[in-house]
Length: 364
Ligand SMILES: *Cc1c(COP(=O)(O)O)cnc(C)c1O
Image (cartoon, rainbow, N blue to C red; front, side, top):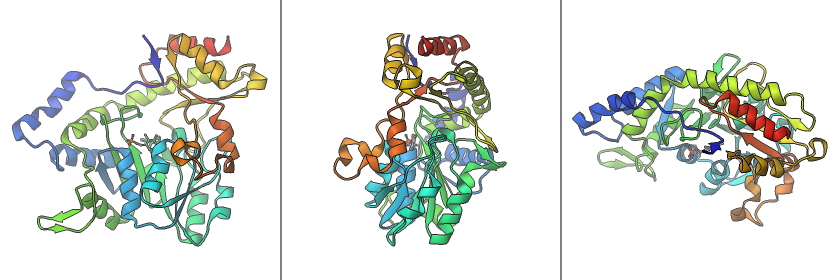
């Protein structure tokens, strides 16, 4: 059997079937029912945030947040991310302006943001990549100086804190993904944490066709509601998330034990002042120093049934759909890392023996 880069967190079957029993009694399956409300409240408590809107998935949460903020012109972001981040900007008819990343933590290089600001810039959309939290102090300072909105793509940072504060509290809004492959999942799902209540109200309307009242349609919305079954999954998984994260921590530390001092292998670590969720274990290879490049390591693992992931590769500015529109060489650090990075398997149920086997194949 193959080992994949992740495995979805699932509650015991009986626990889920118990959770959804009421839905058979009430016949209320979606449209912000009882589970939706319960889950929303439980999440606010867990994430330590005041305002949170549930959405059908992380991508629609991003798209609708940008729409609700009525942004125009250019949005500064990074291409070292999942397709969703860049697509959400472009699908809102905004222009992404790509900023390079730090070579050590892969988040936006805040020393390079200001030179990209023009009179058309309306927002910054940084990504907390792999659960690494961006330099939020510096981003806030720049945003305030230039009167820009800040929306964090927080898809990788479920449950993390920085200096004791929940990561959802930073910026004007932070967007989470609860996709099956994320640390915490609702099968498909997402959420927006926001500061300004009017933004939350708009997102609530937008996710339900822009319907504001029985006879009032005030926004050009879509359908992006989270249904009751997904909310129920979220309620169950929330009871198991702490155990999942501590099991991931053990895997993370095992990799670091074995790969920590290998020449030509850049490992990952937990940032200062951050309580991590151990979402990913990205490794960056220096082909010359290590003797093998990323693609060779990927192929070796694959032959043994280990499916690692070239995550993120290619960078979004190098996608076929954006050919001729952006130049991937504008962000040389992101471009270089994307060709050398490999995300290794990590999830709560991953056996220590398998981690040892993976490391052995890498070091062979
Ligand atoms: C997963 C992910 C998204 C999109 O979330 P979905 O719930 O899959 O729509 C957005 N940004 C990043 C960085 C992601 O990893």
